[in-house]
Image 1 (cartoon, rainbow, N blue to C red):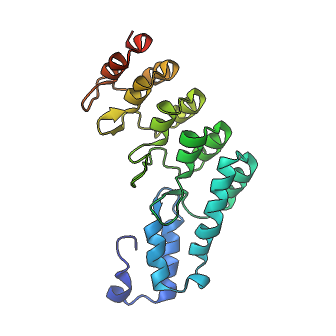
Image 2: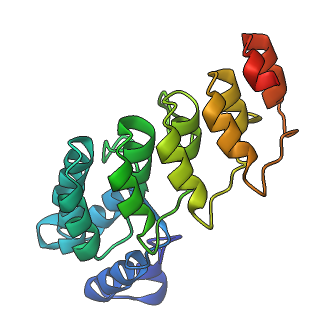
Image 3: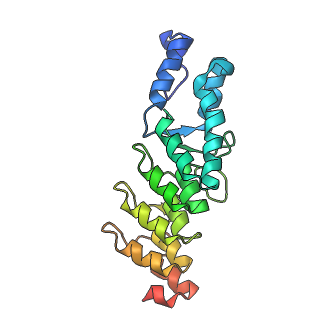
Length: 219
């Protein structure tokens, strides 16, 4: 279903049956949804009759606004009632960031981050994969580096599926924290049992800290 809308001509699926298959796929909580997928769906059947697309057009922008305004209860209600995956990102069509990235990496709303991390299908390592200021970053990288939100970082590190060693062009989360001089966050990252302090692209975290003159981090 996911890899090709050619399923319809190949297997003679009716439009209604294809819609059912697509919606069943997106009811899996652990997948990523791309705005381009919605465009393809709209090309197949009338969008005014497509509840799936309508939910994304109306509900997702409302969720983004609630995240921005730190409306915790609204977000919890959304997560309880929304039947599809919440792993999606901006790609020129939906014009939104993944909920966890927005809550943790942009706005720093701790209680919303906690609520999102409890969602059974949340992808805690989802990257921004489009041409933007944040391309390639994860929520953890953003919170640990540029935003420097210690409490949010602590919460993300508790998640069992967090990959603390993911990198962007060789720069890990630890490297981002070291580069921005986030001493307490560096300490927290170093406590993680899977941290690899020597991972590097062009530089290690130690090199970044030394280059920027962050003496306490170097120590």
